[in-house]
Amino acid sequence: MLYGSAGLIPSTTAISEEEEWALKFAGLPETPQLVQCPLWTAKNTGVTYAFWIKSNRETSAYASPSECILYNGAFNIPLSDGYGIYWGWGPTYPQRLIFYQTTVAAYLISFDITFTKWTHIATVLIDADPNIRIQTYVDGVLNRDRSDIPKGTLPTTRSLYGATDEYVAQFIHPLRENVWLDEIRVWEKTLSADEVKADMLAATPDPQNLVAWYPLNEGKGTVAKDNSGQNKDGTISGAAWAQR
Image 1 (cartoon, rainbow, N blue to C red):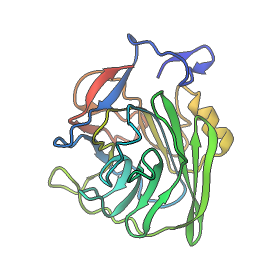
Image 2: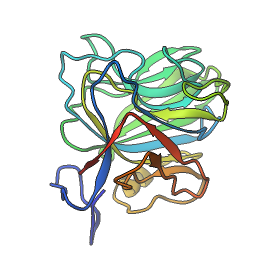
Image 3: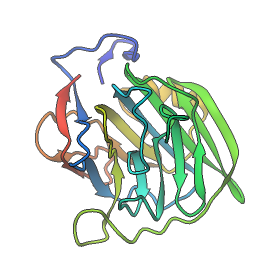
């Protein structure tokens, strides 16, 4: 992300093509593209995910369940044993975000969004026992608030690549379109509306309970550096660096 005297320049502002990097995932169905990381958190609630996203997705190019934006838990195709945020499915919900908890069901967490410009998304999972309350913010504004989603379970025992069980958290596995991601942040705490908006404009995230932070500004190599201090560096498979 690009920062100025007032903080992060909003997604509606032109961003320098010479100073900043993001990670691009091209629409190549035959080539899985993802960043594979050590597990961020095994919690079902009390978690916040935030990231910037841009896509050239067309309304006619809908998703399949393997097209994740973020996924926390064991990962294979189709997705299993975890939960995540991914594209909508079918022609009815092609541009909606979905919360997917494999042991219960899939639920809409955002209304239709066009990601042709850089857009900030924050998803907050709150304990509403026996359910999860999910709040989704788009560019710092509450977009959807649901409290009727069962918690399900979150086993973390398998991974898509590699022989060990350590690497069980991934973000992005898109097909059929180009997707760009930047500034992914994960906390083991729930952010308030004011905190979500403040974080969107902050050069660095609130360090309290921060469990992963990927600025995605390396510009080269196959490592997505975790700057949270938790040593959860990600291994890039298939995706490529692109200037902002």
